[in-house]
Image (tube, rainbow, N blue to C red; front, side, top):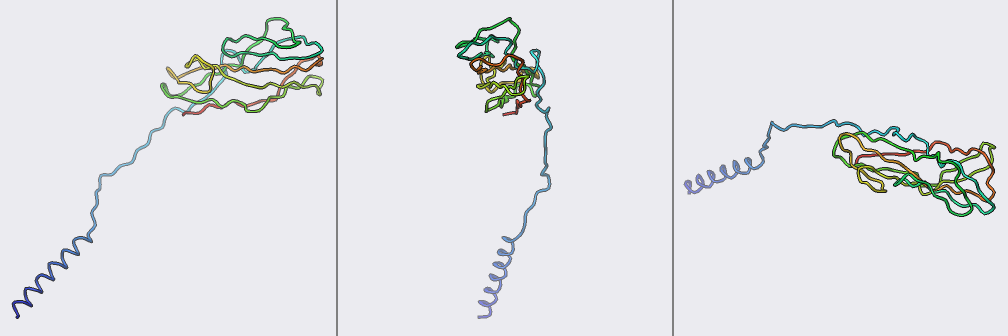
Length: 180
């Protein structure tokens, strides 16, 4: 019986050692961390300038619109609005960043109010759109090639019936670009 007890004690010691072995910790000491700092995306004035300029026009008794198309940088009118002269321009922007990376453009989502130099007459611009050079289309995304891309914006100016003569300007509005 002592042999049995001795054998049983030996088995219990091995079991205790096996249980203790399962509770042991393991570690690895060659773990590292890394990070990359890349060129920030930036936006600046393009060759067209920062003014969305609808130019000069005359308006009759029923009003209408003047549309400045960013895709062909031409203007057209509807209703009782007539174009005067040929000085107008889309606003233009240059985007700098990581070559090959895509980016998105955030345009104003609400109408922009222009106030006349008399301080009380107003007109609005709606439907701001962008023509992006890298995509060759109207849209809100592009790809930076060679570290840069460009885009221009246009929109629709709503001219009231018998709109008061004068020069109309808006407060500043924001255009934002961000990496996708």
